[in-house]
Image (cartoon, chains in turn red, yellow):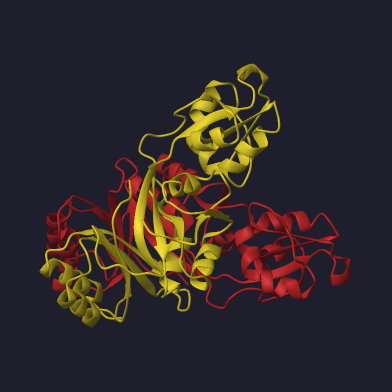
Length: 264
Length: 264
């Protein structure tokens, strides 16, 4: 979609974000944290990043929202959606050889029922499902709860698949210093004056222009206890200047994070 | 405030929730998870619970919101607010004897700068700050990053205080099967019809009655990807039936979680 110097993604190799980022053209660079990706993009020219923003079961990824609010020079230029599917994988293809299971705690929680049927009630927690896959690739007695993508990357055999719920999806965003005003969706972040009806008056602007709000989250402004900023995505683009001007009037701080479309 | 059989709080002993719960009259019972507290209250008569609902830096406690939405028989009857203050504590009062520091990862992140000044760049992660205090009470070479409350409970000396930011507060709620219609604040949870302007029309009802919205969060409905429920707190009580009827008309599902006041 863009010609870039590098694509920073939330690693390690084999992560769900890595799996999402491979559909983009460019050199992929693994990065350990979401905050360090925002920092890298802000400091380099012509690089982009891929980070998770929302999971259908867990809700928003707060570190991504807070960085989008903090970095005024970073915008959203695309989104990628992926179903999260967990498998049990090991170097050996003989399930009887497995003595221990490595997993991220969230992944284990989702897979618990299926794993119990195999006679495993416990696991060894590690920081990511891709780390679990890496460990399993070096130990014949270990298995990992990870994605099929990570299993393939680490040359593991899939012993069991579909370990988790059907309705587990994650949305990833592509971030850049560029801003776009055309796309299927747009993102804005704002604070409202501290008085009754303030949020209502912002939503009124959307209603007036018949614009569909896709989601709204509030997050604490860390500088002042119990004060919030809002994160909002809506259907349509940002090309209507009159609408943006009305939004500006009804908010205290308004940050246009750009228009974007889903990349398939 | 109420005569109860038992007060379930999010433990272990020495937790921030424990510290909040001690102002209530009744037998305190430590419980390992938020979900198990909701379950216990739903199944017993005349018991109440204390759980964290929101932190001024981290935002809402999702497990609490999701359980409030799930358990129709459980309501909110009070709230307690506490400043979160971290100290460095150990059995010995000689800082030179300390070889290792135990902490919860969040607490260490906040205390990192002050701890660095002591020459410590690393720590041993444990599941809670009270667990850290318990370990430090059994090892003369260990110190814990924990609350002054936990330090006192485990007979530790406070070596350094004010390790963290000033603006770190947590709100705890008191939950019960009883519902109240009088108090300073009220809580409702709802879903809206899937069409443009749906949330706007709910907020319009608040605006019409000149009611101040204190906070609004959206959370994923786990049953359907990218569908949400809203959690909303507002100033004032629930005694106006006309207002509640209008809310009912503008929402798809409406759950009245009750009116409550701050307990000091």
